[in-house]
Length: 255
Length: 259
Image: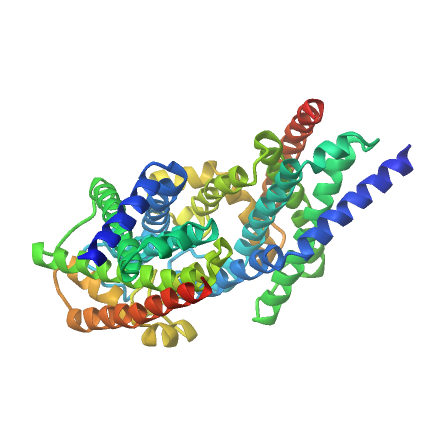
């Protein structure tokens, strides 16, 4: 109960900061829209490449990537806030005041989730206005957004682990770069089967590839390897839970 | 008089270069990140060369133009942020008390950005040649590319300086970064304009000056000597440089008067 009350307090404060500060809110809303526009608009002819087979079209193909990317970066942006809290000394006061410190990590994770739900709602509306073709049913779409939710959780746990260890805003690139790489080493522009060379080898072993391809299959209404994708995403989140809580221990020891 | 001015420019340019070199993040990020994106995009989009009308069989050669412009954007933000820090810490105010001329301050700042621009160009060229990109315009084309990089650096560097002088805030300069990113992505970055299918995107890319900067570099790499692409690229870069330098000179005068 005490853990929950700490979590809700931290989440409320984080969300209040984000939603009352345009410089924090706008980038997390604008970036996914911008990537969606640039990829779906600028590269739409890619679906005419021989072997490209995704019936809902290129806009839908890119929508799934942008949805998962917004989930991951929603978590990373929340990590920036954790680093800022510890850099300014607020984090230390939080550690002193919280009776159950696990609630701190849970609170940040809850805030990241709410933040992503707002972002993905905006991205979805824009995609619908842009005429995205949705072939999947309600259950498929629920599965797609649930995948995004797990990725958001994994990303915020990763970023929290980094922020709690380094406790400085300069840790931003350390949080951001691995997430950026794991996302872009997946089949972003074309299906895995059309990738060639080293990127094909990397994408094949990249766990995010399973999540991305399952997400695209859900939107297309022909679910493929969804259980594997959820397994991979949940395993990532599970491992990163230890990473984040070990980070909390590190912050406690630093005093 | 001229000698004193030269000394002032050299001193400030040296300070700008040394300050950049002493911050690894300001050197490594503008060098490495564009190369990383080049690696990812050129591999991920290599099938685009199968589209009818694609101008080359190597997407890597097509995409090599992007780091040149992207690196310049990063350098712009760093230059603007550094100048904004000078304003915030009062360095500019102290300079205003010396016989330092305004033109020396601006030229010195741009000298640092130009040096960084040339270093970036050499690194990207070396990487491109190392991974097997054939430079269609030959050695003379490399010289032209270096000249183009200097011109682009002056224009973008002056834009960064303008933002810094108008806002006086490093955070505000960083906040403009996404706008530059939009200009980069809503252009002929990933596909030639004639292969962009969506009408509004093709129109936006045609109106976007960054498309012509990219196409100028691209022409030197994959076409050889394309007078139209070179004229448009150098013309756009020159206009950006003249407008940005003029506006930043005016902003500097206002800022120094206030100091």
